[in-house]
Image (cartoon, rainbow, N blue to C red):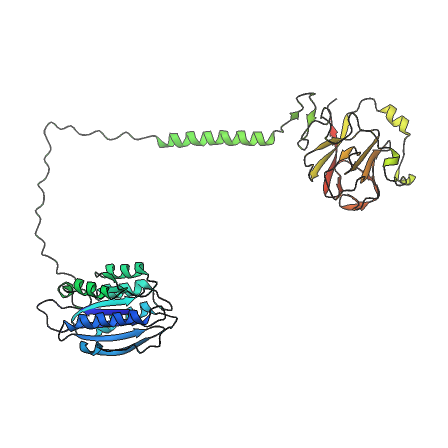
Length: 425
């Protein structure tokens, strides 16, 4: 990147023209681009006798190749940097060049930047370089060289500083740029901070004549005052009524009934256990006990000590004239989620993956004949039929155990809730 700063005094001011040249010596700019940059700078300064210039080269650091002196020294200059360096401290170089120009006595100045516009490794941001150029009245003319030119950065830098951007991709672009820069000296200003223009003397402003009131003018009536407190009170009453209704609805128990038979359904029941259609895969009609030949061996019954005050099965059945309770199994987890299976008081319920079971589970971790649930005349008893993964009741592995209302059975990865549904008489 080559940056040339050129400050110009007004026509009546004394002092030479002064330029500062920044040459990009990073690996992103080839030797041909740097050579074109130096030829353009030499031809530009040859038409301005007495002009001073300085040459700064930068890549991963900034070095002064030529300090301020006669501009004819640019002829035959070779870059001092070793090419193909990875970093390019573009913004740091523009900032340092602006400060060097500001430290010297006023002169007509401008900045020409020959670069691909890519910065890598600068401590400063683009806004820092633009800000100091605006503070010191330094126009920056940017020239894009190299294979990958970031024209957006260069155009922004030139436009904000009051200059222009040129593409310098080939030798013919040098003549085009020189033709555009012939009258550049007339548009340059003195380097240094801008001074505010003197304020103009303010003319005394006569006070407007006092307004006279017409004789037939009637006084305007004051605007009617709104009763805002009435509106606020009404809103509060409405909100109170809404809140009271919401609390009453929450506290009131929502009773659901089966539309077919009128059975009261608890919240956990998705379907009526009385008139619910049979589950897919279960035997048609009422639940039937699986023949012993197709079932696994049933464990021995529990000791008699676990049956306190047992009544004969016939007495228990005779004493139950009207069934007011219906036990059900509800799938709480698994592929059959939400299914409800009625459990009869008599007979046996076989559970497993086989289609011959009363409750068929779509669970690959369940055995074909996994477990059995039956009523012994007093309570429901759950048997494990020597399944591969075992049968669990309330997270405890069992071989046989009594089941009560609210217990959870686990068959493979399927969880079944045993619930006794209370039906209205």
